[in-house]
Each structure stands twice: as C-alpha cells, then as structure tokens.
Length: 167
Image (tube, rainbow, N blue to C red; front, side, top):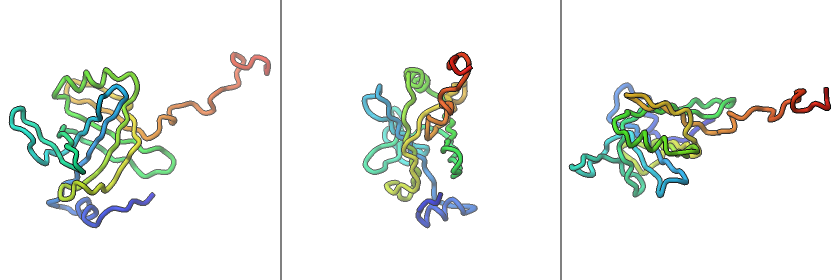
C-alpha cells in the first residue's frame, strides 16, 4: 500500500540527523466522553505556566502534550494495522479514565511535522483501543484497525453439542 507524503516528511524520516520533528496526534472519542480528547506526542508550545501545560496546535485545535511512544504498523495486506502505544503512567486520572470505559474508545492517529502541523502526512482514522495493560510506570495499549479480527471464523462450528441432528 503506497502513501502520498510530502518531500519534507520523507527527508525528515530518512535523514540521519534532522531539525524536523515528527509528531503523533491522537483524537480519543467515546460515547461516554462529552467531547473528544486531543493528545500530542510533542510539547510544541506552552499553554500555561500554572499548571504547566504544553500542547501542539493543529487545524485550530490544541492537542495536549502527554509523553507517549508509538510504533507505526506495517503495511501488510494479510493483517490489519496495529499500533503499539506506550504512555508514561504519571497521572492516575489516566488510569481512572481507562477503567471507566465499558466499550473500546475510538482513536484517530495523525502524523504531522512540527514545521507544518496543519498538514496531515499520515492518518489512521478508525482505530480502537485494545489490550490495555496498566503498570506502575507505563500504560501500554494496542490500537487496532478492525475488531472483527478477534471474532472466530466461521462463526458457528458443526459439533454434536450445537448441531446434534447431524451426528
């Protein structure tokens, strides 16, 4: 699967050293949230001093800085995209928020450059939060593209317990 990205993005990711910073923006939405949560992997600008809050401004929205690492998925045709996300467990509000969801949250992942935060270089729009592990130091989670991958196929099996008339 090919992607159309800017030459500046290609130069930034292929250069041994670069002044350009690649930023991951996450938009977390859930029916139980009043409004989406916007998160950034980079402290681009300071919003306030007390409390100390950093954010990345992209397309008119402030994405709050939360230190996290991510691994982009492979472009394989035989498996759905899966992003590995690792967040520092510095605030217990994150743990309480994650534990309050009964259903998976929807995540939109966007990659931008610090020099042009309004230009989305890559986008994975339909991810779901899965396999969340909460540790003392870190919270790890998988962002998966299709929850149907976890469903058994075929849905029913012809066994004596379910189809006794066949046996």
